[in-house]
Every structure is written in structure tokens, then in C-alpha cells.
Length: 442
Image (cartoon, rainbow, N blue to C red; front, side, top):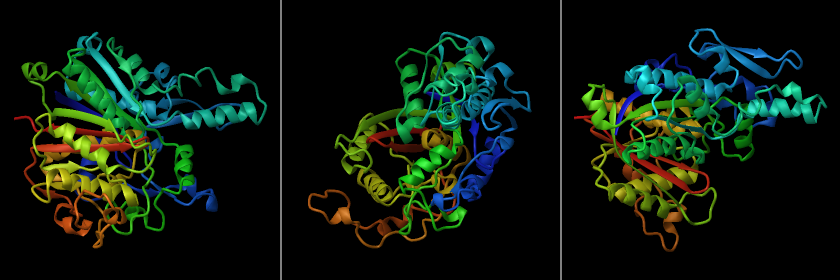
């Protein structure tokens, strides 16, 4: 399966080239965010990899009654027609812009794009929370009439709004749907698109995931007490470090154009990467939140049993949570051994984009293949020299060394290396696990 185009929305970046430049120069895209900061002690965390309307070339048009509801947007760069902006929330606009960039890079003609053999599979982690909150507040609390919510509240907040907006903009005639699997959503949508092409149901698919900037989402995770606190913005996301204390809630979008490999080759397309295999499963232990070593073992077994090559780099989920990072690193070592590869953690540079994480991080894998450089695990200063508590428990059958024993595969700076194969990992609440192998075209 060929990847022939990519685009999206990235914190503190002008475009995908600027995104790559910053990542490979070891920069952090995480900033202090004024929105949660304004609420003082009501929130614990105030850092995020967020994106503003202005940074995306957009102007917000507020409703004339409340002056707080984003009635629609104006694209100051003229990329998206007003009619399409009227049915979109912020994340859907990012998705449409990413789709336009992906198709341009892919070189698909209008006829190919509008074909019955071109589908759209794009999802996000949550609803259009900003639009829902303001709309329902003015109805239920302020006792205003329903029309204050506008005529597009439903289509701007329905689960598959991102895919629907892309399809309407591009006039695609194939499959149009969204897969939701929490923080594995981005990679899961790309994986589903891969299967649609693999099994001959589509020739081309626009795929990916996103999470639009939303203080409502941020506050929800802050209430769970799972967000990073106590560090400077650029040091807040620290996967695998002994002092990690939570993830950085961030926002962004990753969209890719997938095409049947033989078709892409025949027309001389620039192939950014080749998807070898996709595998996903569930932990099956009944735990909504705690990661499962056994589930991740079976994930690796499923991926590698289909003939996937051993990766040169593993793009980790690496959220910077105490339990998740340790189990993930040990599951990788269990599957691949202690050397011969490196791991990287893109969330250390831009935080956790939730529904967009897997798709944006898949793009980082494509960039690593292009630049032949391994992205860093920023802030992984000290790995635990002692065994984790679960390693001491009865019945543990995983690696018996502490995380510090694997320092050589966890580097804090980007570095050059021959990279032919990358494995991408993403997990989500509910015990869902996803893995994808992508290789350089030869």
C-alpha cells in the first residue's frame, strides 16, 4: 500500500515542512496556554501543544446574540468555500486543509478524486465540544430559544463530521466513514483505509485523525489528574523519564493519501512510504485504563506473524504516563530484543493529540523515512534504575531488567541512521491497541 500524500495542522508550525524542521532540530512545540491559565486554581495543568485560529489563517465569526458562539469561520487564504466552512468546526477545517494538501502532493486528478473508487476514512477522539457547550448552555441555562444554537449544531458536532466535510469538499463517491478508538483513532483510521484498499474495495483513500483545540477536552483530562504539571512547557512531556507525571493534552491533525501500490507505481507517483501490515486488538482484561503487557505482546505477535520485517525504529505511543511508558517499552524489548533498533517518542515534542495522535505520528514516521533520521525522546533524562513494581509481582513473565538497561535505544536527540522500516504503535482507553509497519519504497 503506497502513501502518496500528507498534510495536516501542527502546533506552532506554518506547514508540514516547518513541522519537520522543528522536530528534527529537537524543538518542543509545547507552550503555556492562556485559556486554562485564565482559570487559575480551577485547573492543575496549563501547558499544551495547541493551535489558534489565527495560526491557521482563519477568522472566527461570533454569533450576534451571545458573542461567544463560533457561528462560522472565514478562510483568509481562500482555500475552503464559505459553504463548507459553515458545516465545520475547527478540527474539520484542519481535516479539509490536510486533505487538500494530501491530494495536491499525491497528484490525483479531479476525476480520480471524485471517483467511486476514492474513499474517506477520518475520525477524531471527541465531539465538537466548544460548539456543544456554548449552544446547550444558552438553551438550558440562559433559557434562550433553540435557534440561538444555529442551524448547523448537529452537522458540526456529529461523530463523523470530519470525514463528511472532506467528502463534501472533494465530492468523493466511495466509502465515507469514521473509526473511533480513543487515542488509537488516528492510526486506526489509516489502518482501516489500508484494509479497504488491500481487499480491493477502494483504489484510493484519504485517511487520518485529528483533535480540534478544545478547552473542554483539556479540562476533562485535567479532572482525571493525568496531565503533566510542575515542569516548564518544553520539559513537560517526558516519556520514559523517571520523573514523568502525566501527559500534555495537545491538538492537531494528520491526513494522508493512500493508494494501491501498483497503481501508484504505474503512474510514477512519489511514494512517501509503503504500508506493510496493520494489526489491532483489545487487551481483554476488562480494565478501561491500565495498559496490558499481555495485550501488547499479542499485538506484536499479530503484526510480526504476517511477515513484517524487524523495524529500524519503533515510533512509540509514549504518553509520559507512569504505568503506560514502562509497560510499552518492556513490551517492545520483549518482542524485538535489547538492540538492533531505536525507539522515538514524538509526544515528547508536541504532546498527546488524542484522536489525532496516531495520524500525526504516522506522518513523523514518513518524515523519518524521508530524512533518514530518528526523532528524539526529549526529556528522557533518567530511566528508572530499579525494577517497576509490576515486574516484582508474581506471574510477571516479561523482561527482568529495569528501564535503565535500555538506555542505548532511548536517545534524547535526533540522529542520522539508515532507516528502512518503522513500526508505529498507538493505544487507547478501553484496551484498544494498534500497530502498523511502514517501509521505505525501494
